[in-house]
Image (cartoon, rainbow, N blue to C red):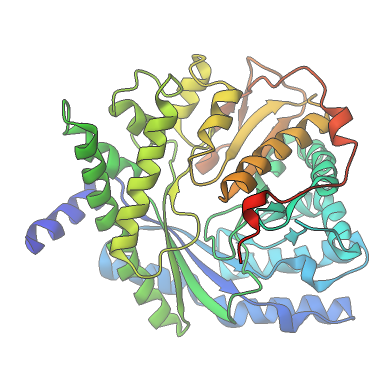
Length: 450
């Protein structure tokens, strides 16, 4: 039996594009923050290089030793707003230091240019948010997020309103590249502190000094397993998804332990999230269709996605004692060829995507919308998605790209892992009256657990 499982795992690696999607080193920067901005930027750079200077080399050694590809090498840091700077200009200096460290360390991305404002905004939080349009335009590898709500605190509608305008400004700053700057920013509700995936990764205040978090994917392997079960009952499909997720997670645990030992830092968590790519069969949408839905987005899609997300989590939990992060299934539009095809043929609408986010791992991810979408409409979309997360006690997120100068029927081309996205219609009716009220949406009644 063990021999068969080893052979099957090797086959998944060779034939079904199973990889370790990311090894992300989380680093606390709390001891780097002080009054002098020049000392802050210097200490940040030195600390990142001290811990992560060998990260890429170690990952390449592991790839060679185990024969498993590690697609991305990344870093996450303490939310930058904790530095409590007073001006946007200071935050631009900090993100430049982060970007230089990421480049010199050789990693793909660095996450943590972030603020946690679910209950209110400090002057430092507001300065960071206001710096984002310039900050993301002058750097290449740094990503950020803003957490605007939680089940415990409710939703900060003032922050939601502000983020609609920030996203529009970022879109304008990167207008010559189909507003790709917006791909660096996620707006969360119930953000988790140990997420290894970009753009929302940060090293939370409850984390230790440093750790290694691993993100594992494998929609191609799950698709291949389900493809062999034509005519089988749905509970048999659940079982094969669990078994496949178990094997993928075990491979990730092996690689994560090796990375932590060689880097001399603690192992954090393993996040098993089916993160699709633009490769033909590396698609969550195609998994749903293989279950019997003619086209992803048809009636039954939300049920199939709920089944998939739950089975993946169950398989992961059995395989590792340290499953964390988000874990489940992502449904980005631009990064999943099956999702792109479903949007283009009209099977998936914006409203159907929102319904699917009630059961997926995150939320509205990498969705291109018309560039002339009002900022209040963007804020309202964030508020809707945050409400799903807050009421259902789950993580939800919004990564929208209002593509400057383009509208429905056109596409935004991002290239690489991000692929391309058809521009989706949003409601033409205004939400400004609601958004402009401001204030805070109270926490739901079930938040009062103690």
